[in-house]
Length: 404
Image (cartoon, rainbow, N blue to C red):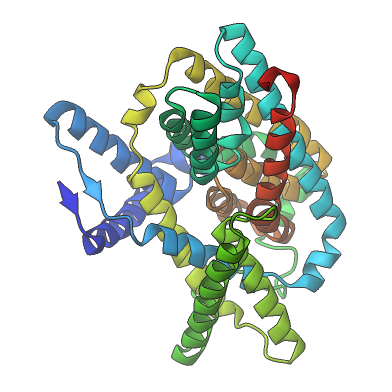
């Protein structure tokens, strides 16, 4: 059964409404701050799995809009990035980047160690490590092709897709419970501050902090922002093509984000700042639709094809992510409310993807209050630096004698 592009868009919209209702109806989902796209999308994916298993009916969605929605989201992150703000948060950004790199190294170390214990090819340690978990579906597909063609790793692509799917699901589920646990460790005065929804009532929220807030904008502002996003997409795609095959090749979404940063700050210098309300509106809509499409189209049956050793490594990586967020990310980033939100976001892209990290943080801040620091640091590290760092870490591991 094939669902066209318009039917897919309708379904994604209904998934978001379903997620909203589920979080409102089920106290457990609210208590553990599960993001609405995760709640709705995962339920639909499970229903489709049952339908395929019991009735042999497979529903195929036309996901042509999924990538554009993701790119629009990253363009709005770039347009929302103020270099002066990034400069002020520089030391904390570097500290968080160090934590992210530390997790990349640990994920691969744990993966390789477990392959020796389980008696399988150590390349699976990288594949079920930072390649598919911190890297996601795109990085997993790229590296699995290399492993299959140059190292003879059997079923590498199938395993990579299944592992990235597992990570996307767990990244969206884990962030809320980790934040709930850590909130108990935050000082009472910090909780009181966050429950008042912000450090100062006069300080406006950042673009992604209030996804449900009404954004006052005009048709002209909306069209102007849409034009900037379109420029970011077109120029970012062109830049990605120019860099393709070079030593500094970058994913398209990173190039799109970079162009957005340049546009935003260049306009700011000439006295034409980007209109924050329109950016927030378009960014939050594209993020929600992308996540809904990504989760409702998950082929959960791919997970059933994973061999026991790979499943064992994935379980260990999930435990590692939770422990790292609780005992390392939270503590190093200051043991305060901002650190709680950062830990939740780290779970999102440490196992899944940057959009999942933002959704995790939105679920936490919607309940406990703003965290400007988290929404300043996580998008830039998760969207830009992590791919570069991950590529360097993976290549460093592949240089080890065990892979030659």
